[in-house]
Length: 55
Image (cartoon, rainbow, N blue to C red; front, side, top):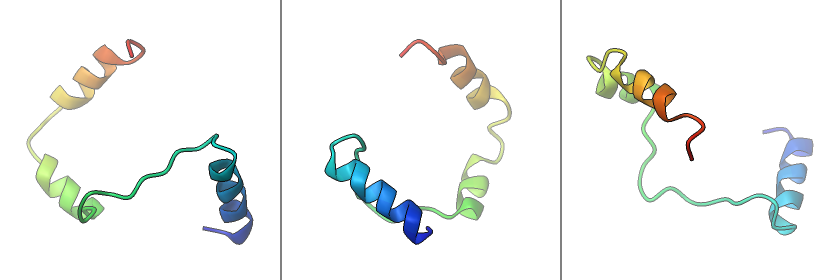
């Protein structure tokens, strides 16, 4: 992340306008996510579209 963007992010965190958290475990790579989600088809994206805006 560029230094300017990092400073902006740090300022927002300090002002309480941005929440950050550390992951509970190792974060999977995009390749690992693709492998994990292979075969899900459109069911997941359709479910996300169905619930979008209802939070």
